[in-house]
Length: 198
Image (cartoon, rainbow, N blue to C red; front, side, top):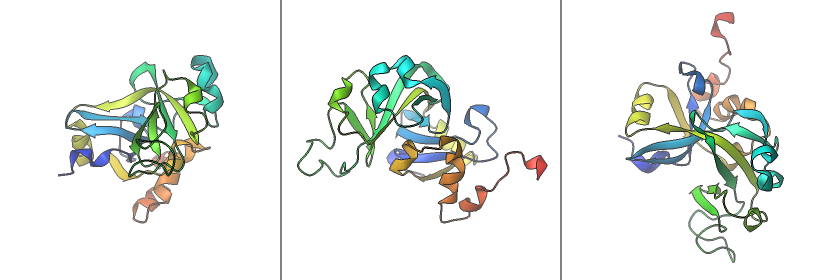
């Protein structure tokens, strides 16, 4: 059995067999995973809504394409900010910088990736952020639900990289993440969008 905290900070990449349209070819960053359940955001679902339309103070810090992303089917009327803080040391504080491992208003998820307190003043974080994405809603699983889906083969679990959060081509992230794997998963990246046309 996988240790319950082991998926935090990793990516769930939807298998071609996953039938749920909410997660077709989705790449999900797991933000929390424990015995209470799991929470993540879909990294490759940009919307047409600009960040300035819903969170104007944060718009200048949002990376290209500068739109809100559909983080998942749960609580789509709420917003989550995920940001990369370059140089943040996963073991603690950045040399000569922040005590506690990151700037005020940012909570580490994994490595240099963390959650942003969107109620904090943007100027607290502005100089520290390397990239910021705003997500409407999130993907959530109850206790044991994600483990069940993993057992059914719905997801591939792979390591995340800070660049996944700020990919300039989020629509291509599913193929990109699979292609960089050093296993048979790299071949899955060539799986056609519609297998019946193959």
